Image (cartoon, rainbow over all chains, first blue to last red; front, side, top):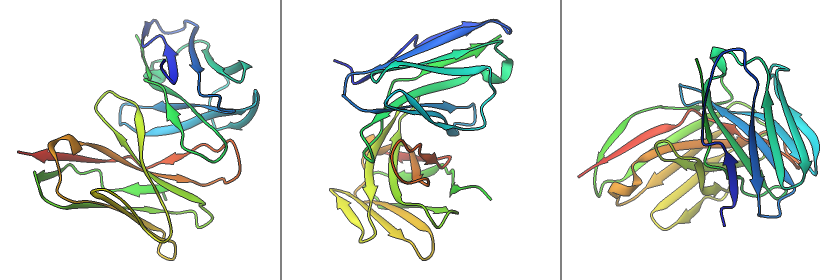
Amino acid sequence: DTAVSQTPKYLVTQMGNDKSIKCEQNLGHDTMYWYKQDSKKFLKIMFSYNNKELIINETVPNRFSPKSPDKAHLNLHINSLELGDSAVYFCASSSRGNEQFFGPGTRLTVL
Amino acid sequence: RKEVEQDPGPFNVPEGATVAFNCTYSNSASQSFFWYRQDCRKEPKLLMSVYSSGNEDGRFTAQLNRASQYISLLIRDSKLSDSATYLCVVNIRGGGADGLTFGKGTHLIIQP
């Protein structure tokens, strides 16, 4: 009964490939997020979706495309992976104005 | 200027001691403030929200100074299990669907 789950937990892939990371929350929250934590441990917001609508899109390359099929899911698709995309990607969810709950993270390594 | 700044540490503190962290934020319109805790190779988890009047949760006390744009966290009687990275977090945008702005974290090591 994990609150926010992500798959896969680890992803190792070659430069130039396209990959997706899935996120699901069973908390009934209406807002979901994607964050990136780089090798220096700096955690930065990438996207925010509220009721399946994109709210925040930080300066993220357009190779990154979030997709929200419903309120409980926010997937992240990455095209043409680059070395600099290697990081830990965290999904999170919240109910308006309240605490954000984070998933366990997906550790992406691009070779 | 970084939006949220913290001393990265590490802070090496003997068990039982009191330790304090600070952080500063640059946007005076920031609306809500938090301390999150992140253990090695784990996700961040909310430790406590920070209110203008200051608030306490067991051994943890958080303070906010809006005039100086400064947030603090005090840990009393530190335990080995308090070893972690403490992230100062600010909600800058306000309203719904807000992403959080994280500091880089302060690494705390409690030594036996």
